[in-house]
Length: 174
Ligand code: ZN
Image: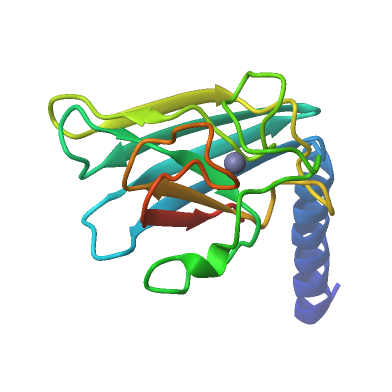
């Protein structure tokens, strides 16, 4: 076997290895990790971790730079676009069911309405939310949309936004 033939054989083996690795990934499992970017002149940041296993979807978030003890509206928004300085580019609340705005867990709420964030004494809030009622991707899915932290509490009543004030941080689920 010539040197070039050996090289070709080694390369083919390496490529097969890569292929085997790709096919062994579970297509029903996904993980998105995203950083929250400050908007509207805030110093809010943090990290999101959204995992999917089949139909189960779980969100974990750590949000920093909040006023200690403060409460903040927290939603998935329709468009995965955080580009505007006030994050208006993310559109309204993600609303795959055509519902009214409301409280997570109540009978009527947007699919994108999440439990409000509450900051601890250090201005850090943590979220741990089961999103299995939502879909992962496609026209009704959360992938490619945005998650927004608002500057004020959500009143769960005012339509269609909950009157939660400026958008102080934004991350794209992608
Ligand atoms: Zn809403």
